[in-house]
Image (cartoon, rainbow, N blue to C red; front, side, top):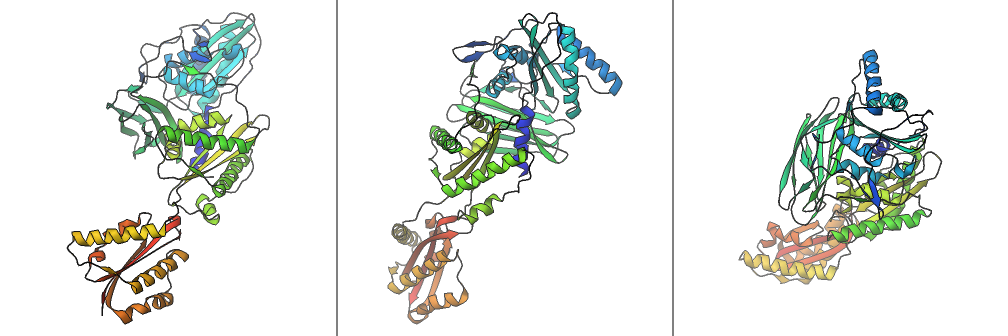
Length: 541
């Protein structure tokens, strides 16, 4: 598996929400402002912030379970020398909105969590979360028991901030929401929305042990830009142009030589930030992987249609490989040893050769969540909306084992050239040659039957042999030229845009006759349906 795929799966693991049932007791919880669910949508009780980054207006409660948790962490820090995470008003607002989801130990859907984090200006992608119910109401007991979870998070990321909320569901039962945000990025405030034709500077730095910052941004047209830094500091410009839409941003960096996703957020372009979010139904694993593959294919084409990008064609050979990759991801997640897959090599063996191959892997709880994850990633969204790709194959593998239930998705997007109308291309080439010579004040060329015959056979030989002609075969093909012509210039090549060969300087060379050959074949880089062109410009004896 590639480092990129491993990183994406690690991200899902990092964002995974843990359930933990704590010990019993009794006392009283802290009342917090929860979100309001109406008509299938969630609306936070607190107003949205205007920027991503630290907030001076959002604060955490000064007492309750959070105060007890802080005291326990201070004692732990004295013994170990560790750093105590400080309360973060943004995280407390998120916890307050989502605590007691479903009036029980239910975990909020990831789309709801992502919306709420953005609503309160949290850009970071590595937020750890714990949603649970406990059979106690005493804030001291709750605070003490949460310490171990935070200490476990600090073992991976030794610095960060905290947010905590509790909610009394009924007598003797309290819901708890705990969030921990690692200190990985220092980000200057970034607006959550931009007016049309406005721009904003994304400025910040990654903190040790991270280095080599990279900013990825997919603009509101789906075009991807990458800004790399050899150090910790980064700077990139976010522009809102064209149509209303979303700018998707990620900040990545390396830790111990491995790439990590640190920040992930959306900036609205010529549109307001959403005030609420649809609450999706409980995630379900697809019962029919083939139907799920078709659903994802249709969703990808629907997204492309919304952006005015040509529709993708389905390719069975690509889909078969995509399914193999999805099954390999599932095997690796189960702890098995699946062999690494050479995507380019495997496609070549299946007869699919392309100059553009992009891949979207995913591990999610449902098909809808997988699609939402692709659209929330600048790289994956850019892959899906890439106007250069023409064909796609999508594979789905389901893991229904208890404890690891998930759906693995592999989307492969490939550029395949359309079939060539040889006669039409030849006519257009002859017209383009005539025009080019006229503009260059070169003599008019007359089509020659011998030249055309040799050019066509030469083009067909190129098309049959991946653009190569053996020396002996070349001698046989060109032998008729020596009897009839004083000299001849040859222009030949494989090009998806065959008319570009007319720009060659030899097209306007001295001569009085011309021959044009066109054939279609497979090219080792450009793939199948590649046009092969041979042009002879010659002078008769």
